[in-house]
Image (cartoon, rainbow, N blue to C red; front, side, top):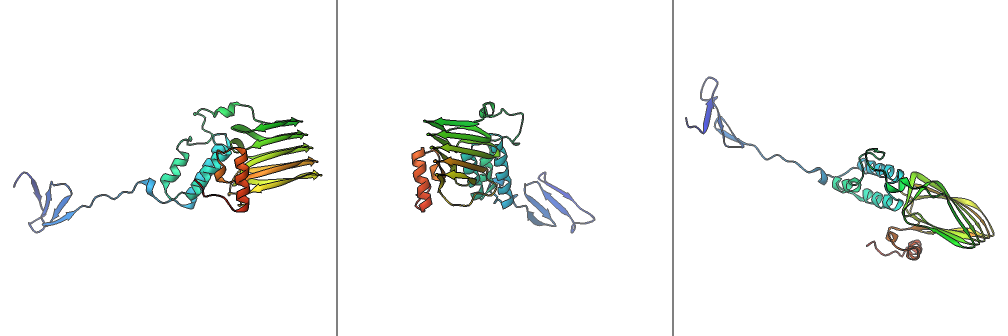
Length: 254
């Protein structure tokens, strides 16, 4: 017998088992049985279920609640999660976040070391709050013969809820929020009022809740619900896009 083969048997040649050392080939009673290549599919290419999308939405919400994501970042990633088809697409949405939202081993977000915004006051003048800032619990906006601008797109809303108390005497306020956010608007106006401008899409399930309480005396408030096309643009352009969304005349997303 040559060195390239081994023979063994149980009582005779008919039951003889022959093994060849050539990889992937097994000879049994002279009949070759070939082993096919192992079939494996990368996890990233597997289709995702609604439960997997919901889990990612929950994770994103937890990170936003501790200040790692702004309101606009949360809604952008949430929209991408709802549209994701594969596990790879979902994985990219949390790849830059710790495994646990409250993970103590990682550095706290820089904004978590800053004091949250509590008050905005304008007396015969105006004040603006935009860019990245902490919002915890509530913000009180007071305008006396003046006005306040509150742009919540880059706000870090801790806890997933925020109350805006808008108080105006011969003045007013403008508020800007991404349109998937849930809004609860109420209050009282005397010789004044408020308006909501923008998309009328229903809020995303599980979205942060913004309560707006308006108290006007000869004053008013404008609330702009901004579509995705308004990400990163100035307030004037954001107003234009909100009005276009209200009329159903939005351009296609870029």
